[in-house]
Image (cartoon, rainbow, N blue to C red):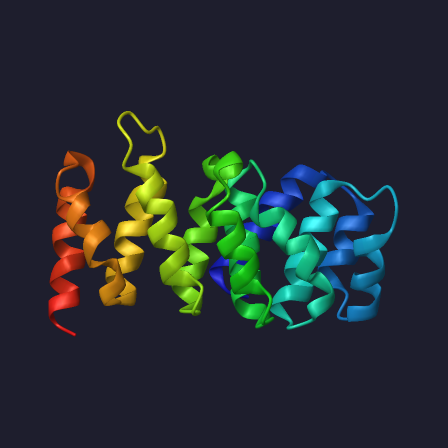
Length: 190
């Protein structure tokens, strides 16, 4: 069990309490049983998250929609677990969904994990989505500096020349300037 799986199961064990359903969902190896639990009416959120995570990390695409919903959840831990499972899932729809979430101004407060997922995927959608999201964060008094910083760092990691103008603009923003310098330096090395 990797660290992300261990963290998720411990968190959800606490959320579920002493529950036989939790024990069953954690221990079963039957992907069909997990998929059935994913769509079963009345399931608590912890059960849906656990099942979607397990299916996603097993490469079962039946988890895709549930994981995308969790990637956009208000709870940062749920978003991080969903991003981990989506990265493992290998579904070709993932990058497009993450780009849509990262660039949705109505949900920008929850864009951190979609941004990080786009960088991890290195998909064609990543650079345009990160540039769009970062440009919007350069407004005065924007409250989403963590999202902006993740975009700057991600664009540096991806090393695409298309990012140079927006990274140069970041030099004028004290909270982003140092990260922008490093990102621009990575572009020079390519």
